[in-house]
Length: 434
Image (tube, rainbow, N blue to C red; front, side, top):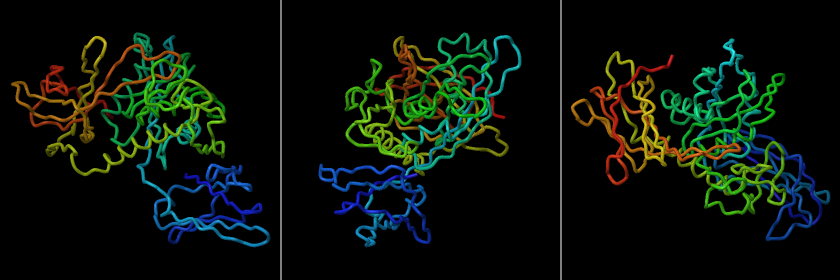
């Protein structure tokens, strides 16, 4: 859904008679916003500065020949205004494809766990759609994953533990243009949760939400979901309510900046004077700043270009009757201790995933040291969204590589200087996909 503003500038107050969008054979009546907004032109407010704001479904913005016709009436005379799409600076982005995965923790008394509550997907994604550069989306709800209480109780950080589970799941089965989002439900089976955590620039995150069991609407957590997706769109924390944040954020106290932003749920433009702050901060009330939006849009356009590229796609040397098509690999580096750990080495029935360009390299060898496969890789940081900041810096890497002709027995990671940073024997386990 796209919203745009047109200020009339007539000498007397104008009355809007109607507005239409034509795109080839398509003709759509534009929905007018419920609130008119005064517009600044040449740094001055128009005397009759009503600004008429309209909602336009995104599919009608794809044709550069489309145009909008607005019919005004002033002093008893009708005056049409035509806005051609070719005069607007528009770009096409990939659809946003979130995969929501409920994670349910078994109750402490060993009884059968309550299932995930019925929740309203639109309500869960309302802030995400409002604040991120999304033209259209295709949300999917995956079946619930049940987590033994004993496992999560032993973890130092419950949300970070679930993030690792969701990352492993996405690495094994997810499409390259999907965003896997694990959802914990506060209070279900008496398990408390709070905040969220996500990888910056990688498509996995975790949010804790509170759902009204009668209506399915979210009592709490929609802003957390948007915040974590913001990290996936390569946004870092902004300077309000925490000590570590993006040093390039241009405004103090996570302010919005000079450019207003349209809020679809509120049906009006939000300005810096309204007191809203960046949703990537820990302060309230949250909204999207011009910096947030530009940075997220640039990253998503970058990913859109990668997903649309036809070259550099790894291909499995598939043989008749072959069950597995790739190997999912995942590991992490504890920056403080310098310790590396291999977390996943698993066959997958899904095709290999195109590697992200990066300064590191992942190399596989057979049992006698012959190189089998090599690809570039990146390390991803994770950031939290709760009262506690990340206790230590942990970097994680992901890959889904073709199944080589020989069984891989060793994995090595080469740093940007060409020096071996990590080596580990690997034993690839069967897929858990059903």
